[in-house]
Length: 480
Ligand SMILES: [Zn+2]
Image (cartoon, rainbow, N blue to C red; front, top):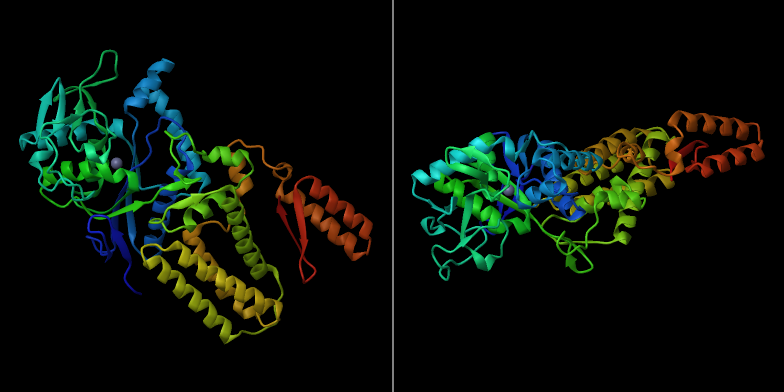
């Protein structure tokens, strides 16, 4: 198999991927700040990193991934205080919601999903290491990183520091590129604020130190891959590099992979612009988890993705097309034998699929390989050229594709029920009940009682179940 190429933000080039430890990939993903529902722009990034880890696993790597949960920051402290509860209690509920959302999108859980507030000691020790190297200073009880002491500052985001005033400080965690300044590693408590009593004084960690400390604790001082949304490049990831590399003297991350924005009506979807959808809003409108996952995964991560409800409908039909094809493979009676042409066609699709993903996770190219196969195989089936012996290898290919895209299992209704949504009426009728009705209708058809058969079809339709008669006299059903 050919090399995997990743576009590395640090070098600005596509580079062959070679992990530091043979057969194992260590990667870190900036997780959510758990102060509210995540929106689907956030889930675009999380879906990208899921596709990444699934592909690495498909290629035989063991993946060790850490994702942090930022469960302390200005907004969390403020919101918790407003509600009169502790920050732990406040963030617990949003962590729960985040995990449920991830499950609904079939995002594989990282090996370590960890909370910032469980790692205060690790952050304090890292700040102490930086202080021992004279990279920090104290002002009003807060500890700042002196960026003029780290000459490589700006190498990730490609910013020129010549115009920066030494000693200019910034207290907030998020700021614009033009404002490269000394940033807070440790923040002195404001009156009434939640704080930790530590050897470096009372206070709480800045956002950036969190990721450096937690990444290095679980993955070692040099990581293979660090992922995140493109807007984290500066200042967050730049600061992670400054903190980690100044402390260890080693490269912090070998491949930086950044997912582009998800846009809506020409603008970046964001909390601050108020132009966002949460997953649950889309579920409430009747959209399926599989359509959302498909849409988010279908556009290569380095390209901006324009979100629209039309696009979501198209994603739903694409998923349906894949599921119908697999259903045909499993249930239709094909003429006996095998066709070498079809075996070759399937092998070609598998090769093209890999080739797409090898090229910096080009999911659009990989999906094109899948849909071309589906089209060609469907045509062969319609012409009677597809043989029963061709089905197992076509099915195996579809299952391999689904190790990345994870949309084939027809489990949307079940996932929505798990989130407490009342789905279409069909959700309330069990699979076994539907099967019983279908068997009854088949019996009616057999004795040519078409009135009874039609009645059953109608009854099921009223409950959100759609029946499709197949070419070989069978029936397939699905929920609306
Ligand atoms: Zn981070």
